[in-house]
Amino acid sequence: MVNKVNIYNVIKFQSPFERLKSYTNSPDVILRKAIITQAIIDATNISKFRTAKKLEQEAKLWIFGGSESFKETCLEGGIEPSFVVRVTKAIIKLHKNKSRLRKSSQQNSVDSKNKKTLFRTKL
Image 1 (cartoon, rainbow, N blue to C red):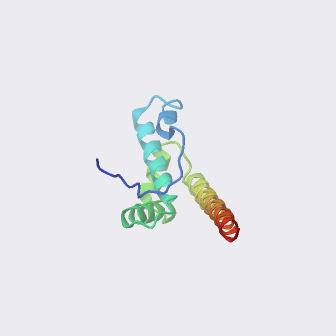
Image 2 (image 1 turned 60 degrees about the vertical axis):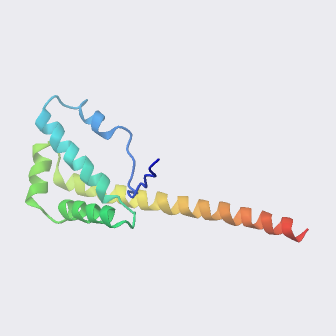
Image 3 (image 1 turned 90 degrees about the horizontal axis):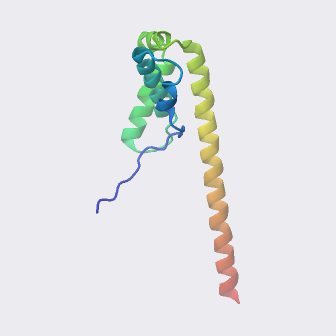
């Protein structure tokens, strides 16, 4: 049996690509929106793995770097590029805060277990 390690630590959207189909029937528009959605997801990475960091950096450069390709893709997808930039910044911030809270909660849980173990040991 092969152990698979998930190296990506990105925000998880519920069926993001399926939802795109409900807004338009145009395959070209759906493709552009899927590209933008994947870039947003990649930009939210907080993993330290090299491959994930590379995807994160490429996505952030594409979205925040003033790329003509990014602007064209947005406009062809019927989305204002500045809106995508604002939303991406907000989602990155949300994902980082959520991750921090999760780590803090996990640490508190570990600390609580350690205290219980320490208490039992002293008795």
